[in-house]
Image 1 (cartoon, rainbow over the protein chains, first blue to last red):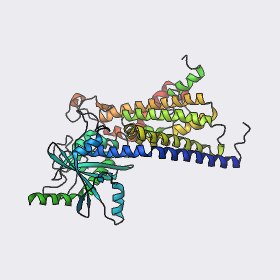
Image 2: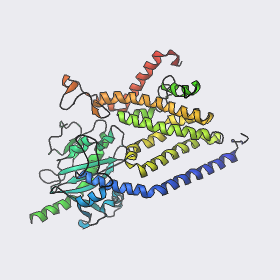
Image 3: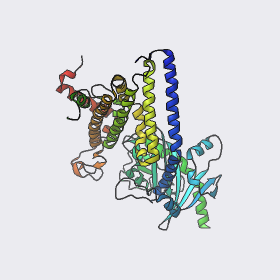
Image 4: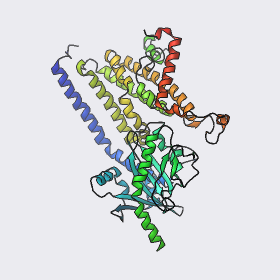
Length: 253
Length: 214
C-alpha cells in the first residue's frame, strides 16, 4: 500500500470518517427498527401483566411461556377489565395505564412530584386480580415485575424480569420456581400492617409451605438481586395499600 | 479435512487444545467466571462469541491496511461495539424473545478480551478467510472451556444439567441426596470457576510439558 497510515493528518481523517460512518449506521438502524421494537415492548408489557394473573401458556414444570404475540391484544382486552391510574389517592380509569413508565414515575416522586400508580384489574374464572407493577435495582442493573394480588393483598401470581443480572444466579428471578414461591404469600401481617415479602436466606422453608411468614426462600448466589426483589416489593406495593383499604371499606359498607 | 488445507485446519484445531484462548493465551477469563454457573448460559455465550468473533475478524482483516496504527485499538473497539449493537437491535425488532435471552451477554461480549486479543494478534496481519477461521477456532476453544466449567459448576452446585435435575431432588431427598449428598453452593460462586479453570490448566500442562513457561 502506498498510503502512509502513520501520518497524523491521516489518523485524524480516518477517525472522523469512521465516527461518521458508524454513527450514521447506528442511527439509521435505530431509527428504522424503532417502530418494531416499540411494538414488541408494548406486547411484552401486556404479556407480563397477563402472566402475573395466571393467563399464560405454562405447561407442567416447564419454562415460563407467555400468551403468544398474535393473541395477546385480544386476551388483554378479555381478561383485564379495568386499568386504573391512582394519583393522590384518587383512582381514575385510563386505557393506556399499562404504558406508564414506572422509571419516570419513580424519578418524579424523587424530585417532589406526584407519582402516578397504574393498577390493572383482571377477572379470570370468577376471581378478581389487582396487578401492580414494581421496579427496583438488582446487582448490576434494573429489575422489575408485576404482582397480582387479591383484595386482601395476598399474592396470586408474580412476574419478575431483569436487565442484566448474572445468568445462572440473579437471572434466576425470572425462573418459574422462584416466581411460583410467591403464590399465597401475604403482604400484610395478621393485624393488617404492611410488611411486604422478604427474600430470605435460611428461612428453613425451602418448599415454601409456610405462607404467613412474609418470607420466600432465596436463590443461592444471588443475595443482592434477592434483596432488590424484597426492596421493590416493600417500597412500591406499599403505595397501593390505601387503595386496598378503601376497597375493604367500600365492601363492608 | 478435505475442505481446508492443512495450514487452515490448524487455525481451527490449535485453539481447541494447545493454543486455547482461555487456558494458554489467558484471554476471556472474566466472562468464563461470570456466566458459567449454568451450562445453558455457557453454551449461549459460546455461540454468541463465535458469531461476533467470526464476523469481527473478517471486518478487521478487510480494514487492516487502512487502519492507522496509532488508534487501532479504538477502531477495533468501535467495530465490535457497532457490530454487537446492530445485531442486538435487529434481534429486538424481529426476534424479541431471543434478544431477551441474549441481552445479558451483550455487555460481556463487547468487553471480552478474546475479541480484542484476536483482532490485535491475528486479524490485523492476515487475510479475511484465514481470520475468519481463526475467529471460529478461537471461539470454539473458548466455548469448550466454558462448557467444561459450566458442566461441573451446574452439576456440583445445583445438581442439574441444562436445568434438568440429574442427581435427584435436594428438598425431597431422593436420588443421591438420599445418601446424604448435598449441593455445594460454593460452586455457584465465581471463584470456583477460577479454580476449575486452574485445574484444567494443570491437567493440560502436565500432559504436554511443552506448554509450561519458565
